[in-house]
Structure formats: C-alpha cells, structure tokens
Image (cartoon, rainbow, N blue to C red; front, side, top):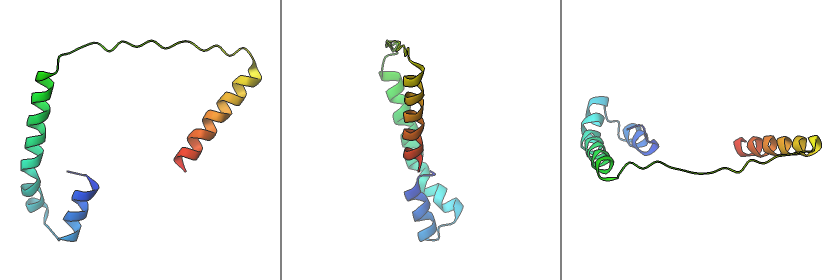
Length: 78
C-alpha cells in the first residue's frame, strides 16, 4: 500500500485515508492469499551454495581491491 503509484493516486485524486484503504484492501487480501497459496505449494528446500575463498597475498593488491569496491559503491550511491 506504500508503493509510489498508490501514493500518487492518493494525492492526485484527493482520496481520504479511509477510502484509500477501502479501495486497496481487496488487492492486499488477494496478495496475501496468493502468497499463502504459493508458500504452501512450493516445497521447502535447503539452498546450498559454495563460495570459493579468495586469498590476496599482496597488501598492495588488497588496497587496490578495497579502493575499487569503495569507489564502486560510492559511484553507485551517487
């Protein structure tokens, strides 16, 4: 119910809060019912994955790697 398109509709058409919840309630209930059905139908399985350990012997390479990761995250966030 907090999706941007819902909030846009809420503000664009000047719908009061109670009316907005009345409009959205069938969709929320349908979503929960479908999620419940999917949770019951899909079997529980353990997810198994293996991560290879990477060993960096050179401190200089480690510094470059950390700098690259920092720069990547920084550029991603800006």
